[in-house]
Image (cartoon, protein in one colour):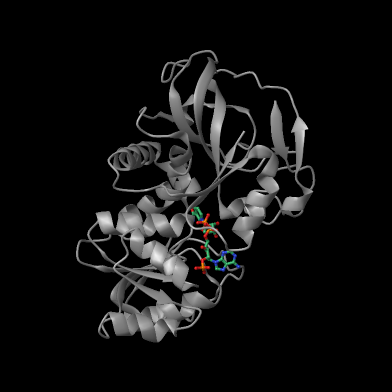
Amino acid sequence: MKALLCTRYGTPDDLEIADIAVPEPGAGEALVKIEAAALNFFDTLIIAGKYQFKPAPPFSPAAEFAGTVEKLGAGVTSVKVGDRVLGYMTYGAAREHVAVSAERLLKIPDALDFDRAAGLCITYGTTLHALKDRAKLKTGESLAVLGASGGVGLAAVELGKIMGARVIACASSDDKLVFAREHGADLGINYASDDLKEALRRVTDGRGVDVIYDPVGGPYTEPSLRSIAWQGRFLVVGFAAGDIPKLPLNLVLLKGCDVLGVFWGAFIERDPQGHRANTQQLVDWCVQGKISSHVHSVYPLAEGRAALKAIAARQVMGKVILRP
Ligand SMILES: NC(=O)c1ccc[n+]([C@@H]2O[C@H](COP(=O)([O-])OP(=O)(O)OC[C@H]3O[C@@H](n4cnc5c(N)ncnc54)[C@H](OP(=O)(O)O)[C@@H]3O)[C@@H](O)[C@H]2O)c1
């Protein structure tokens, strides 16, 4: 089978397409024919050896996927051959087949296409965990989303609306803000041209923002924290801008606010039932048209380098999909 391989840590240009053996599913595993593998920003870090997981090369990027069950290992009863499924792994889905624990798979209905299903598990799963389990976002609260047109950012816009929040999209271009508003955001702030702290205060009539969703970090974190409401919640999701910001803790004291870490990978290990329930909810919402799982572009596996370069260049709105 064909696989997109990282044979040494580096840039997308260092990735190679190779022929490798189709794996045999072990006990408790299913062999899945990958129909769509969704890329995330962290794939650009994994292949550079700069992520929290540093797999030994050779390995494939892509941690979430959708496909068809082709073969079962011993003892698997939760899925059967022919089932359409979505699933996740820490890395390794950018290839034609994967053997994965059946517990990591969830059946999907025919009404949900593989491309949109592939991006639900991690991208939307992280955000539902953040807004529901961590911030406990309530109807009528304001929610500011940084990087609002990116993968998890768009998910936060859409899930924030479902949860009844007033969603303030924040992004680096007017095009990205138009896109976020088309997906439900109530208003937008261009943080490349506007002062983020002042703008967030302005659009909340000086009250400040109840919940801030930050997958970007870098220069945007502190100005947004300075605009948080009394007893607001600040969600630390990621650092796509590169720098991990340091926060003056006096701000947390003065605002009486909570700074909440979001770590989806640890959450699903500690609360597998909660994760399954969240994922099923996301599948249902996607089938009902309540969330888009918007696909920005689909690349053949052989063009995986270009797909990762587009993410690193900040060009993507929604998800990038690889089709083996
Ligand atoms: N905590 C968790 O469990 C968890 C789970 C999944 C993902 N994450 C993290 O969440 C972050 C976003 O992931 P994603 O897959 O949604 O990424 P994405 O689709 O690439 O979106 C990231 C957004 O960050 C903004 N950005 C600012 N500076 C950037 C830069 N130098 N390069 C790229 N983007 C930049 C961009 O929006 P603007 O141009 O509008 O600024 C972009 O839309 C990553 O740090 C990822 O590791 C965390």
